[in-house]
Image (cartoon, rainbow, N blue to C red; front, side):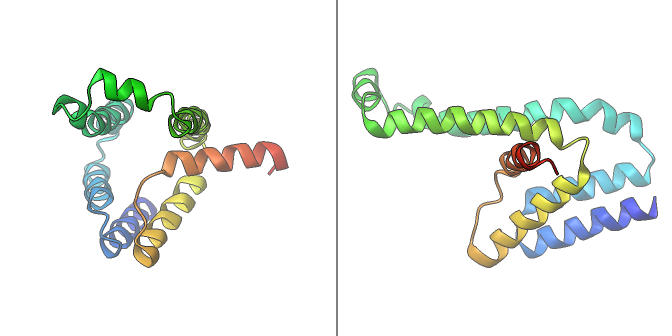
Length: 149
């Protein structure tokens, strides 16, 4: 229990320094649940929270369409460009890699901690964006498969 508390506090503090408030709040919520020994609650919310997060991201990304920023004609013209082709390919590759990352994260917490620290350092030192933990874990999963580590 003490180890869990320390790890979550360190993540919360590093996140606070990096101004990643989402991770601060998540760490503190889980710290509270951990201190309350609410393991059944954590088990119950783990999978749905992933989907809630994806839902929120999709809402964010679809708002310009909902606001009428794009129409069929302009989208149709854009979709035959090289940029669109590369974007589709990138989306496919990143989704594939992300799927690999999602499968490795629950079984290898060191990967999660590592990519979290790397993300926080990027945010803190280079104005990076605290996104891509799953993609980074996917890269680790693919590299570990290739290099057998």
